Structures are given as C-alpha cells and as structure tokens.
Length: 162
Image (cartoon, rainbow, N blue to C red; front, side):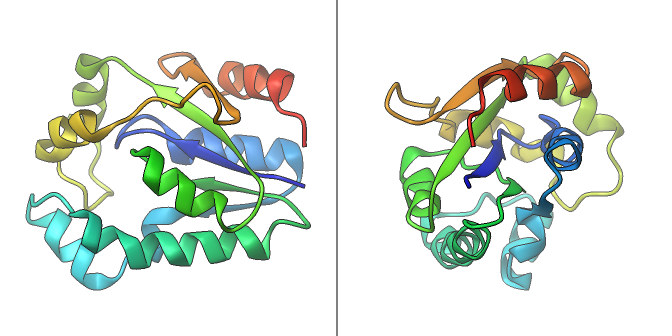
C-alpha cells in the first residue's frame, strides 16, 4: 500500500479532503498538526514561522507514521511545503502526494473565518513563499482545491494507484 499525503498551505482544505479520502479508501486519517511539539505550536500561535530546524523532529515522527501505515495504507494531512520535507516523509515508506493548490485570496478568506486552529492567517504569505510544487519525479497530483471536497477526492481516486 501507499500512504497518501494531502499537502498544501494552511487553509487549503487538507483536513476536509483528507478525511473524505480516508473514508473512501477505508484507511486511517492523521492530521500532522497533532504531531507538533508544544514549542512549535506556541511559536506558530504567536505568528512566528517555523524554521527547518523546528520541523525536522516533527517530520521524522511523521515519517515513522508513514512507515507504520505502509502495509495498511493511510492518509496524512501535512503541509509538506518543501521537497526536502517530502523526501523525509518518503523515507518512511511509499507515499503519493495530493497537492491542494488554492488562490491566495481564497486562502486568506478561509483563514479569516477559521477559529479552531492555532495557525494565524498572518503566516499564510510565509507558507506560500516556502511552498515548492511537486516535481515531475514526485508521485502525485496537483488539484484546484477551490473545488468541492468530493470532486477533489474523485480526481485523486482516478489518478491514485495504491
């Protein structure tokens, strides 16, 4: 099996799409934000972007989750903004990426209305600046995430070969 990583910046819809996709595949869904150490959450909550050094232990933990679900499959909602971060995730086992791409204005509007997350809207621009699109050699699909979740999942299932 392969773990699907639903990736993108904050507000792209990773949790929504990831939950629907996991349900359709009959596998476990995990939200990467729940694996952050408290220091990372405090930093982001105060509007300070994480550094690579902040992320490495978190990414290693996520790679372990990928490895633990390599046989059964799973869906992981994770920003996975940079290729080197995705490389760490792939180190855990086979991964297929579903990149949720959304226009800046749509993201900003979504974040303005979100009240149940520690990530402030002020970090959106730093996330967009850090985002590296999937490379041609990275298995996955990039979709317009302004579409309804069911349509995004249908497109993913059409392309995804576990």
